[in-house]
Image (tube, rainbow, N blue to C red; front, side, top):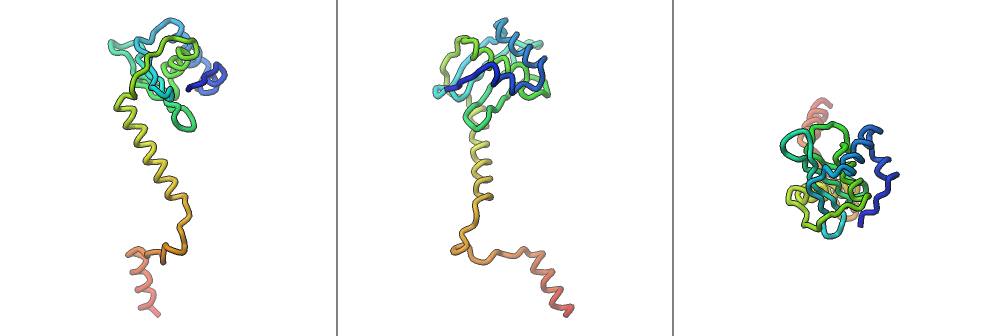
Length: 150
């Protein structure tokens, strides 16, 4: 379950204007769709923007820190829409329970694979079973050239 506070959201904001504008979006009801996944580690929705199509926005709390995504053109992370989504949750607006959208599920899978690869690289090799480290072709050629010059 997501436990949001105003201080937590404020700490994520890139600046005061984004924070204030995000709160206004939630208070004005600019979100046309609000949902969370069954285990409540992801909130997502759509927010009316300046264009004809609403922005797709989500905040994923499944990892160590929240991952904010939005289809808006803003370069700020999190943008006012992601902050507004968190404020909508904080203000007790109604969120429907829905499965994780496929595009977000795919992004979660990619993050998991990346983290797994990082962990494998960081894990020390088991010296008893690893055997000698293989040399690259370039290092073998360099060694042969060095031997010829002796």
